[in-house]
Image 1 (cartoon, rainbow over the protein chains, first blue to last red):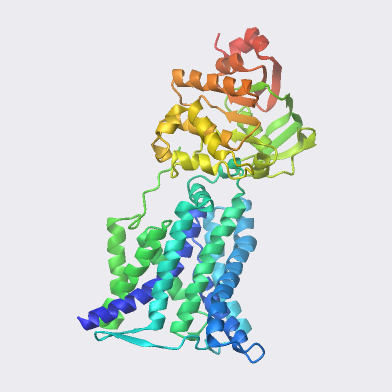
Image 2 (cartoon, rainbow over the protein chains, first blue to last red):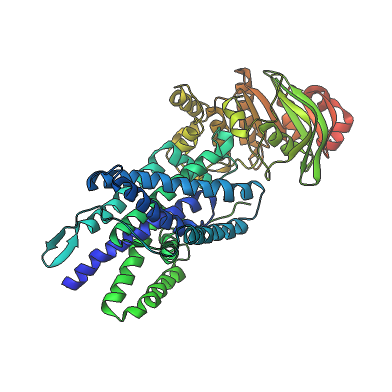
Amino acid sequence: MELFLQQCVNALQWGSFYALIALGYTLVYGVLRLINFAHGDIFMVGAYIAFFVSTALLAPGLGLSREWTLALTIPLTMILTSLVGVTLERIAYRPLMRKGAHRLYVVVTALMCGLVLENGNLALLGASRKTLPQLLEKNVYDFGGIAVTNLKLWVIFAAALVFLVLHFVVTKTRIGMAMRAVSWDKFALPLMGIPLDSVIVFTFTLGSGVAGLGGMLFAMSYPVLEPYMGAMTGWKAFIAAVVGGIGDIRGAFVGGFLLAFVEIMVAAFLPSTFRDLFAFSILLLILWRRPTGIFGKPQTTKI
Amino acid sequence: MLRVTNLKAAYGKIEALHGISFHVEKGEIVTLIGANGAGKSTTLKALMRLPPPESAVVTAGDIEFDGVSILGVSAHNVVSDLKMTLVPEGRHIFGNLTVMENLQLAAWSRKDKGAAKDIDRIFDIFPRLAERAKQHSDTLSGGEQQMLAVGRALMTKCSVLLLDEPSMGLAPLIMYDMFRTLKKLNADGLTIVVVEQNARLALEVADRAYVLDTGEIIAEGPAGDLLQKPEIRAAYLGA
């Protein structure tokens, strides 16, 4: 029982990482009907940005304390990572879509952008792995035999907070209303006097910023960074978004936590080599019963 | 107010408008009539400066609004700055938003504080929308959706309203109601350009009309005169 509860805490932590990435997939898909396959690598870029920002802030020149470094690295990482995401949209996706390219070509372009980010990182920074400086004094709390670090609690808290904020933005604000409107009908948006590009840029900003936060929290939990760290995690987060019902932010969260829960439990109670086999089989079963994901609604095409 | 001169527009290599000229004066109702594929919708979308691929690219000629060329203006600025908008063919309402949200969203570019008051005004014009304010708009009937599409356009506080086939798919009674409403809005100062396949209905409410045939204007004049012309009657009114 204790082992199970301990693993639940771990699942919540991993689920938070998946959810923070899955959100970006789902937001962009909701607005553009585009799978931004570079998004996992945006997560990786976020981890590296956190590394550079925190190292610079801690360096003797500035010499900030650890607490201040942490407090400043979070917003700076989110802002800089969202700039990377918005840049991709601006230089890679927008020109293609402007020319009326089929969505498939944009998806392939996104895949290529991801590879460019991975290998560009390798070429620029070399193969030696970077280590994120420790930004948070580690405390371990003991809840009746279950060990929980303060970092894990922060990760879970951050994911929950991000969910609440995004849910509020999408359902209650005007820009969120516009995001939902675009997902239904892109054609009519300019007729309301709303610049479509602003809505798209806002969406990429949100998605990439949240992925940047995810990258930073991941790097704090597992401080060794390498250029391909976003690839597998990104794929899994994408799958989580699809299982949850892509286009729906609740789906991204539920999907992320579900995937993490299955993975962690399989690894804990069965030979850990079965992890991906079981995890993906269960997800396949879900998609077989609910092809549009847990929260997804079947799309109807208007004639 | 609106002046189109020698406008040519093409979808890719296919030219859809072969140099049309027309004008709309403040306070008028002008109708463009013509058969399927004549270029009526293309003309309206060109006026709105909508981007391709949905809209054709202007290759020659000019569109002036109050004497200034608007070829370089983007669609959302046509709405926010020139105060002209379009009720598109097929309505294109945001079905995943409630009726209320559709109306609120359309007030996006307005700088004045009168949006809430205007929603009340639209509920006065279309009481059915008030009843359904909290409903997702894809649950509305065709006629109600058309009301919402017009109401939403009015929320932009437009002074020129373009309508593309507002009668499409509507039952006759609702269709007449809609045109009566348009006439009333026009009496309150709204300039209207309406594209219609139901030529008789359009000619009955319009001040002036242009007849479009395969990308060219083949007749124009006061709507009442066109209604009497034998060749127009034969080709477009089925009489």
